Image (cartoon, rainbow, N blue to C red; front, side):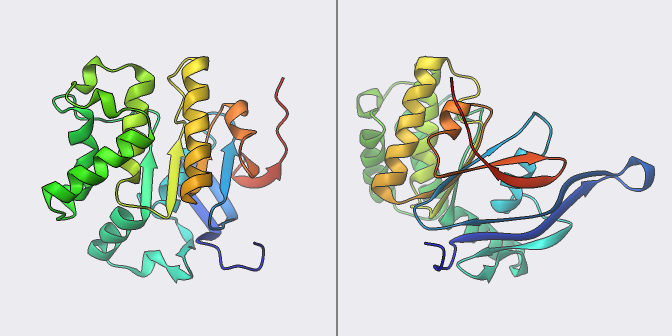
Length: 233
């Protein structure tokens, strides 16, 4: 794996906010490589920049310096239209808050990215049904998402993130609002999707149980990313 071209690579990423005496350096020249089928955890205290790093990797934010490469291509050399198309096709996002549309059912929520990409409704529906089956929610079609449990809503969010067939899944505290038992189910779902679908993933988390399931774990502190080991008790 070490000799293969990374599917996603960040090089010398720097990010700061403010200027002069008000400047805060969040990321200080960090680098990270993600290979095909690999899963990586980013751990660290609240406010250290884990979300900022994920947003940069997913092109939702831009670094002050440094580059992000997808299969060797510098993504920040794309214009806004190309970048949006790239993000929609190759990157899936799962956030702590699922951001589902409450007036729609699970099927409609999962279909939305495909419909926005111009896919026919029949094809989008078929793909969404297949994903809901994979995440164990096929029986919830027709129910408004407001009637689902927190874990069920997060599984809908995972299915929605996967419908475009992304190469990379970025998950930001995906179980931050869930109880222990529900969190474990989401953890297992992420691992199964990684192993069966070969989706590369980067997960930012406070949950050491989830981090321990990743192939590699990095700790972000003082803007620096260092590989570490996780011990759970």
